[in-house]
Length: 89
Image 1: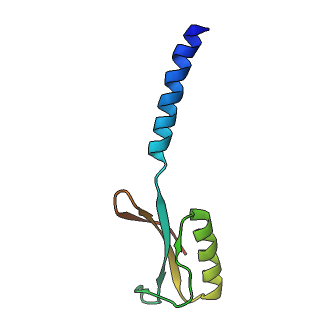
Image 2 (image 1 turned 90 degrees about the horizontal axis):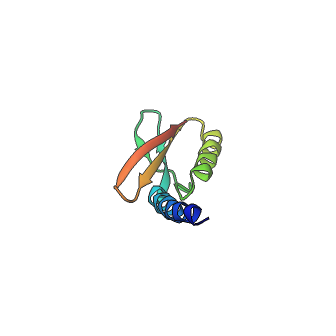
Image 3 (image 1 turned 30 degrees about the vertical axis):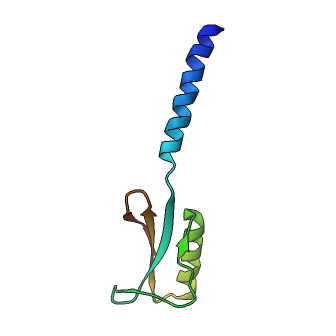
């Protein structure tokens, strides 16, 4: 029984520590493109989100409401100050 605890307690500690390192605070932003591919800003559109699924849902709804514009979902990494395009409609 002691052997199990000597293995289990360090394993749990390492697992929790790695799990905290993996979880990064990302924010997501919807970028709007016009027909020429230029980034524009439309009034009354929510563009900043904390959740990827919510941002994707809003982006699909915006594509239905504004069919002549293209939308891109960008992940903004707060730790590295890096942006990554995730999806494009």
